[in-house]
Length: 397
Image (cartoon, rainbow, N blue to C red):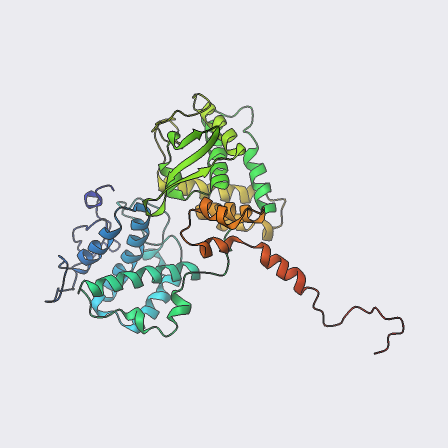
């Protein structure tokens, strides 16, 4: 993990004096937290205590960044209210959840994606959806549980939530954020359309990279961080079959079968880069590359590239009714993973193989992608009518 402490400080309110950065937590002002006798971590401030919690996840950079984001939002919000972690009460959680749904003043809290060192960096790109708010509270519940064990705070206010099971359970009945097959097919056909004959070499390169990126995401269902860190040598051949080797969530090594379409895309992409059709074992060069054809592409750049492509697809497919193409306006990179797994399930892939492709630890997580049963349930319930079809000859009761 990079040295986050070396990053320039980000300050939301330039009127507030800044304190040093701790493990990438950008915090203005002076913390009011004071360690008590029972503290079991080396921390003097709330920021240092949260940084200690975050270090528990330093071997999983994607998780670390996600957890830092939620903890930082809470710390900044508390700072603006003149409160500390120790002062959080049950009613504070309700106020914070309302804030996540509508961060105000928006000019101070909400803004486009910017480097964390930029003066116009903001903690939010937009208000959080209900699902994102639930995820934020799940993360913070775990943080408070750890801080209680560390002796930094006396109690976990989340334990007082009477409707905690409904509010904090992040498991959902089914995955909703995916592109339906018909929309995906139209979107993919648009991605396949090559640039015009007068296009520049850079435009052709961008088109080839975009085509490969979305094909890779759809066929192998990688996470964003896995795409950013993928290497050419991760594609290996064993006994005539190609596999994608990936170290995923929790540092778990897995091998995913490479279908024929994926191998064709890989060959095309390597041809664009001026490389031999198939990678060699141990090739540590980046799979997805910048415009120079050599450097890798980071998480943030990939995120923006995918979002921009979805937005461009929404504008391009203007022959479709807005309601049908609207998902492209809201889609994020993780929608690609949901779309891939949902379509694999709809194609009849067995649950055990789908779980291995998704690299889920629990089958019930994978089962969220099984929509076929819901479709059949819907079809059968359609026969339940208020008025039965008349099959008699005389119409009598």
